[in-house]
Image (cartoon, rainbow, N blue to C red; front, side, top):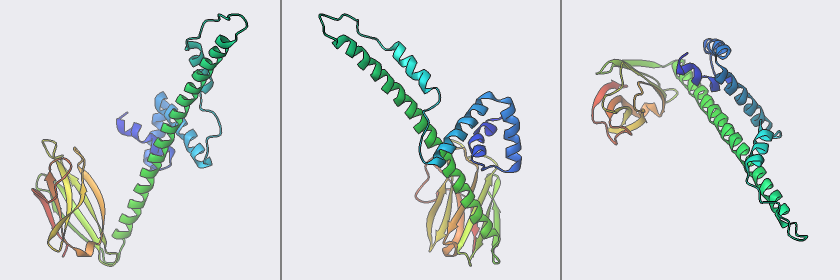
Length: 241
């Protein structure tokens, strides 16, 4: 199986995949123990997030606590006269081990909770963007314009003046060389405005742009990693007026 299947497990648990992706993940889970375990843990974490509180101790917490107690160095049981301080110290050490184990279990849960929250946020953002793109493409006055990229590939611009918004869709044949990146632009009142800087190696983008009626040009340039304040090498220049 490819890494893409593994990366879909989080979205699968959050029901943020289409039918074909769900079928592919279902098949994969029958074959991959690691992904089955991850999916089960994510389902449990998601259920707890829905409840708004952690009401059950983390799995394996008892074993972790007992293991921590067993490996914690104890003070010798030398009890001078009637003093019970060494015994008390032993239980203090054991209690400290328990606290450390509980803290470790809590850390695991916090990390897992944050991972689920992050994946849920990404899925919600993807759904919101998809709804925006569908709305623009369904607008009665939508205009579609496209142009090939200088180094292979195509950029398509769809915009609606009624919605005063548009979407830039780019698919390049290859990523820029030497660690450089693609950067998306609009030109408004003669001034280039950066709309998105792609990551190193990224070759596709879908960017919703608000206020599209004020943009006369949509451009794609190749820039150093992190982008530039102004385009230096344009590889596409799409007129929108």
